[in-house]
Image 1 (cartoon, rainbow, N blue to C red):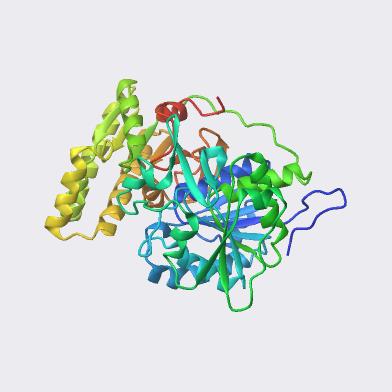
Image 2: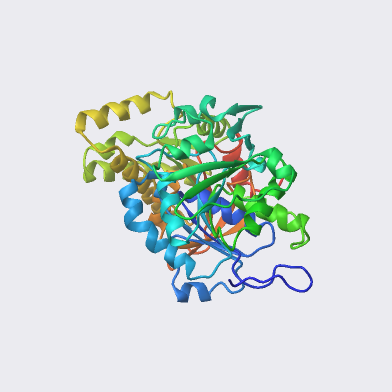
Length: 460
């Protein structure tokens, strides 16, 4: 492999991690962890060409974003083997299939089990480490069970107010191994518990012909470092890993505690923007609180009628035009527009959308794709016609579909906000090159997140 340990005990040149994100915001969050730890990283919207890579010398990590979280196992069978082979060609120490820190998946949609099967085949792995938790984001795994913070509380995943009500993959199981095992008939499972990590245990040996997903507890810096040690120490035989950006948090903590990497100076903000446009396809209660805060603090909130995606291209284009006009009018008045499809799961717009889906026979996945693409078109038109250079996309799946409309081929990290939703610089061949863009999952962020990004981010 390309990376060596130097005589000084440092990580020498080479690609440490190549990752493939099953949604856009998660893929971007992984880059954030690495960049703000002092390791140059970039996220591409597709596996990069040699010419694109030449523009970013001295990279230590390369990521590729996708919308695999919304896709079927058949789509994974058709697409993932080739992607993994292309990542393998970069000769990284580890290849990471990045999934959501709240396990969004099912046997039919975004199957983690199928991704493990495919990755293990390409990389000849028998034991596949699974690190979903990320204590830095208030995601915790304790004796195999996943917990997630919201507000001032921490909930077991199957009792989480947001994830238990997810519109596509509602979570009814907090045991990570059980959840994943439902998605594959080939997988054995094992656990590296907090007790195992404390006594220095590593990945188990797995006999030939078997495939084992090894979930790893992490609760704090000590268990994080131990999880990182387990993955890094086993990289020769278990090169393929799966999990959230908790994988990178754990690796960085191990590298820092073991002296392989110096702790980086915390990054700063980039200052308030002269105008900003935001779009949201999330129905999360978290996003609803952010929209409510924005309404109370001078943003111009514009409702996008998502039912129009059930009525053909002309209906969609009319709704896009209405939203663009409203955004441009708001900017001309000195207000920052925020286009949204719903103000949380209890918004009547959600029920209207479901009824229209049923009445017209529209495929749900097609509808979500059209919504994301429509919001992306609104974003592009407003940015192009107004000259505004900062934007936000809210919603993990929305971010992938919307960003594809901007002509962007890569992102690099600029300034932090909450972990997992930083401000990025867009790299594009066209007018969106240099755009300051924040991408956030629906369940992420403080109530004032939109204002925080408008003001330039930075630690608090």
